[in-house]
Amino acid sequence: MLFEEMNPIQWQSAGKIVELAGYSIFTIDTGEVGNQDSEPLLILHGFPTSSYDFHLVLDQLSQHRRVIALDMLGFGFSDKPDIHYTLALQADIINEFLSYLDIHSLSLLTHDMGDSVGGELLARNLEGANSFTFVQRVLTNGSIYIELAHLSGGQQFLLALPDEILAQVIDPSTKRFEDALETTFSPRHHVDPSELQACAWLITYNHGHRVLPRTIRYIEERRANQSRFTGAIERHPSPLSILWGEDDPIAIAKMARKLLEDRSKLNDTRSGSPLDTQLCITKYIGHYPMLEGPAEFAKSVIKAINHP
Image 1: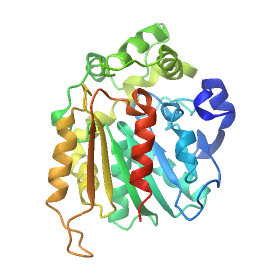
Image 2: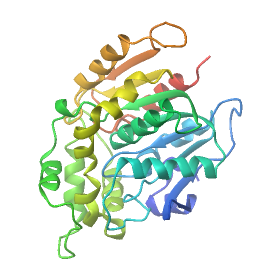
Image 3: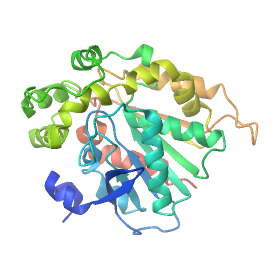
């Protein structure tokens, strides 16, 4: 069965639980298919959803290279412990995942919170704290400049709560999550309601809605350490393609333009040349370009990572 045709339960069957950093983490690995001269592509999803966000584009991406993904701790089919969540912990898990797969050279596709986790991985790389080579990066719709973010009412509500697990009595109705997700999509683009239903179901899977006041703390961490996460995104010498939905109401397109501008001021210390950066802002697409315009999104990612 094609990945794009899978519902969440079929997606779960296509993946594998791996013990990483002491937690059970759901992983997807398309295996060594396509062009094996190309490095694998690691996908990092955003808040509050899961790797399933990318199921509509995985078939196209995996025609060209091995694609790997995971549900980060607290999301999707991975463990959802009652702990204080940090971007460093998520990065530790990903480091172990790459070591488990014996991958040392890779491309990186990140979205939303995944951009921040990717920033931590890149910061460690710049510090010489990991041995991975990032060959190419694709970054899409995330609040990389938190001062420009237009946080939703739901995000502000969760951030106002204590960093504690929600009481069991909280209504886990998926409809409220469907409605919240829909507000982040472009009003000028139709998305199949079944996609909203699937994403919302995965948010509530295994009481996932109860840990949302804990997992959303990454926004506070971004505020406190933006120079580390976004600074690494800006400074890392690997070529960067920025793919952005113009109608994103939270991570507004101004962020993508600022990243291009700030990165264009920097030179690759190895060559003295401007850092390789491309920007593509797509009309009629909101916060989830992989769900709102999957064919165009996959085409753009493939173009970006099929470097000379």
